[in-house]
Amino acid sequence: MKRLVLAFGVIGFVGCFLPMVGELSWFDMRHFDEGWTVWLVIAAFATPALVGLSRTPFKTADAAGATAAFAYIVWKFHGHLWDLIVHSAIGGMLMGLAAVLGFVVSGTTLLQTIQTKKRA
Image (cartoon, rainbow, N blue to C red; front, top):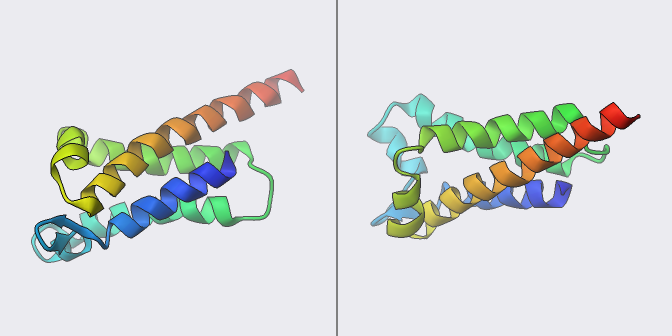
Protein backbone atom coordinates (compact mmCIF):
# COMPACT_ATOMS: atom_id res chain seq x y z
CA MET A 1 0.00 0.00 0.00
CA LYS A 2 2.87 2.33 0.76
CA ARG A 3 4.14 2.02 -2.80
CA LEU A 4 0.69 2.83 -4.19
CA VAL A 5 0.52 5.96 -2.06
CA LEU A 6 3.98 6.90 -3.33
CA ALA A 7 2.96 6.20 -6.93
CA PHE A 8 -0.23 8.28 -6.78
CA GLY A 9 1.61 11.13 -5.08
CA VAL A 10 4.31 11.16 -7.76
CA ILE A 11 1.79 10.79 -10.60
CA GLY A 12 -0.21 13.76 -9.30
CA PHE A 13 2.94 15.80 -8.70
CA VAL A 14 4.16 15.20 -12.25
CA GLY A 15 0.67 15.96 -13.57
CA CYS A 16 0.91 19.43 -12.02
CA PHE A 17 3.65 20.31 -14.51
CA LEU A 18 2.13 18.73 -17.64
CA PRO A 19 -0.40 20.51 -19.89
CA MET A 20 -3.84 20.74 -18.32
CA VAL A 21 -5.75 23.21 -20.47
CA GLY A 22 -4.25 23.78 -23.89
CA GLU A 23 -0.58 24.45 -23.25
CA LEU A 24 -1.09 25.63 -19.66
CA SER A 25 -0.17 23.40 -16.76
CA TRP A 26 -1.46 23.65 -13.19
CA PHE A 27 1.89 25.21 -12.30
CA ASP A 28 1.32 27.91 -14.95
CA MET A 29 -2.03 28.76 -13.36
CA ARG A 30 -0.21 30.39 -10.44
CA HIS A 31 -0.17 33.60 -12.51
CA PHE A 32 -3.95 33.65 -12.97
CA ASP A 33 -5.28 32.28 -9.70
CA GLU A 34 -4.22 32.93 -6.15
CA GLY A 35 -0.69 31.61 -6.02
CA TRP A 36 -1.28 29.85 -2.70
CA THR A 37 -3.90 27.55 -4.15
CA VAL A 38 -1.50 26.25 -6.78
CA TRP A 39 1.32 25.78 -4.29
CA LEU A 40 -0.96 24.02 -1.78
CA VAL A 41 -2.11 21.49 -4.39
CA ILE A 42 1.48 20.82 -5.44
CA ALA A 43 2.46 20.39 -1.76
CA ALA A 44 -0.52 18.12 -1.22
CA PHE A 45 0.74 15.79 -3.95
CA ALA A 46 4.30 15.97 -2.61
CA THR A 47 3.24 14.97 0.92
CA PRO A 48 2.08 11.42 0.10
CA ALA A 49 5.11 11.00 -2.15
CA LEU A 50 7.39 11.83 0.76
CA VAL A 51 5.42 9.56 3.09
CA GLY A 52 5.79 6.76 0.56
CA LEU A 53 9.53 7.34 0.27
CA SER A 54 10.18 6.99 4.00
CA ARG A 55 11.83 3.78 5.14
CA THR A 56 9.72 3.33 8.25
CA PRO A 57 6.66 1.05 8.30
CA PHE A 58 3.34 2.66 7.44
CA LYS A 59 1.94 4.07 10.68
CA THR A 60 -1.45 5.54 11.43
CA ALA A 61 -0.08 9.09 11.31
CA ASP A 62 1.51 8.45 7.90
CA ALA A 63 -1.74 7.11 6.51
CA ALA A 64 -3.70 10.00 8.05
CA GLY A 65 -1.35 12.58 6.54
CA ALA A 66 -1.54 11.01 3.09
CA THR A 67 -5.31 10.71 3.31
CA ALA A 68 -5.65 14.34 4.40
CA ALA A 69 -3.41 15.51 1.54
CA PHE A 70 -5.42 13.62 -1.07
CA ALA A 71 -8.67 14.72 0.59
CA TYR A 72 -7.61 18.36 0.25
CA ILE A 73 -7.06 17.89 -3.48
CA VAL A 74 -10.41 16.13 -3.91
CA TRP A 75 -12.07 18.94 -1.95
CA LYS A 76 -10.28 21.62 -3.99
CA PHE A 77 -11.53 20.19 -7.29
CA HIS A 78 -14.77 18.71 -5.92
CA GLY A 79 -17.12 20.41 -8.36
CA HIS A 80 -14.88 19.93 -11.36
CA LEU A 81 -13.20 16.62 -10.60
CA TRP A 82 -15.05 14.73 -13.32
CA ASP A 83 -14.28 17.48 -15.86
CA LEU A 84 -10.64 17.40 -14.77
CA ILE A 85 -10.40 13.67 -15.38
CA VAL A 86 -12.41 13.46 -18.61
CA HIS A 87 -12.15 16.79 -20.41
CA SER A 88 -8.67 18.13 -19.66
CA ALA A 89 -5.28 17.35 -21.16
CA ILE A 90 -2.88 14.76 -19.76
CA GLY A 91 -1.82 16.82 -16.73
CA GLY A 92 -5.36 17.28 -15.51
CA MET A 93 -6.19 13.63 -16.11
CA LEU A 94 -3.19 12.51 -14.10
CA MET A 95 -3.96 14.95 -11.28
CA GLY A 96 -7.61 13.92 -11.07
CA LEU A 97 -7.01 10.19 -11.20
CA ALA A 98 -4.12 10.38 -8.74
CA ALA A 99 -6.23 12.40 -6.30
CA VAL A 100 -9.22 10.05 -6.37
CA LEU A 101 -7.29 6.78 -6.39
CA GLY A 102 -4.76 8.08 -3.87
CA PHE A 103 -7.56 9.09 -1.53
CA VAL A 104 -9.14 5.64 -1.80
CA VAL A 105 -5.85 3.78 -1.26
CA SER A 106 -4.61 5.96 1.60
CA GLY A 107 -8.05 5.98 3.24
CA THR A 108 -8.19 2.20 3.05
CA THR A 109 -4.70 2.01 4.52
CA LEU A 110 -5.71 4.37 7.32
CA LEU A 111 -8.69 2.18 8.20
CA GLN A 112 -6.50 -0.92 8.14
CA THR A 113 -3.90 0.60 10.46
CA ILE A 114 -6.60 1.73 12.88
CA GLN A 115 -8.21 -1.70 12.86
CA THR A 116 -4.85 -3.40 13.37
CA LYS A 117 -4.12 -1.12 16.30
CA LYS A 118 -7.46 -1.99 17.93
CA ARG A 119 -6.75 -5.72 17.66
CA ALA A 120 -3.34 -5.42 19.29
